[in-house]
Figure: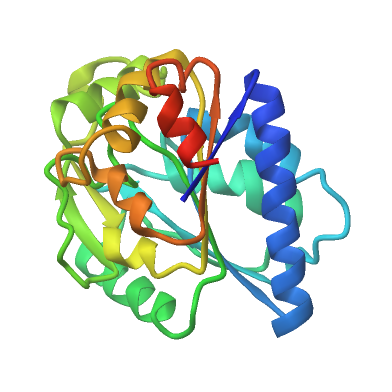
Length: 251
């Protein structure tokens, strides 16, 4: 794993987006296609804005998978991750081949179908973030580090639900769903290259727990440290609690 610390969020977004575009172009050139796992949430706004404006990415050769989605939430809801991906990635690029996790259908059937598709061939690149509680996708602590299921149904903890409220997606905590579909941790780690994008001071404690502490299910994103081609992009705010020797060692 490599850590890159940028001065501010926009610089971070540009660096991560250029890195991602290089991987996508190379995968398409070598294989005729690229398979992508896309993250959602407020932390991804700037990154996806930059990425979708970069030239010479053959988006019609990209197959996209979805990290997670709330159970029972319609796509018309502002917090729907299906809606997020349509508005901020699919519609902007013209991706034609994508697998969304519908929050309105039977979740067991949804994860069975999409899980079968993602296991059909290697995935070239994943975009992920780190939650305020250290979660990776919707794998809240203590995360299941052992399951080989590509997607699982999870119960969201209070810290995760409060983050969604704090980001402005819901009117009250009672409105935040308690269950979700999430890609499993081990499925994420099967991706050839991972770009982890974590801005903002509110993520500093989680960044420290995941990248300065033990690799543990209580800090789910800490598992990324065992992946040989993960690059974590931080800004000075999110990196503010990391020890200098940690940053130096992971450059």
